[in-house]
Length: 142
Image (cartoon, rainbow, N blue to C red; front, side, top):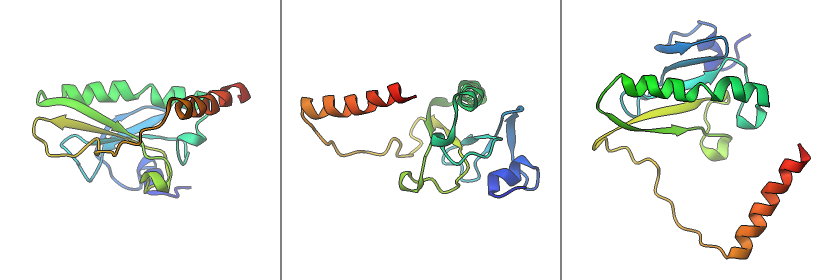
């Protein structure tokens, strides 16, 4: 039963400009086309975000990113780079709560402001060490 727009695209209920499909993923052109060739890579499994991936799903989906990226780049000799983005959660700008990866080709003088400029937040060596230790400790809980 299709719930979100990506489920409906995967089910064939909504048309899409497909560029790649296998048993695990579907890649299709984003209708917003931030730049020509802007593609979404969507797992066929209905997972809301990266936090819901298990190791098997991550291996089956995320390893397809280079394959799709190479095809996009090879499709246009004017492509000189690529942003690969994944928004996870509303606070991160996710608007469709079915995991998806944006592959956005970059062209000379394309005017797209990515990555967005960020303000520096300098911290002490001690704070860096504390943050790193908190994250590293989570791996022993797996």
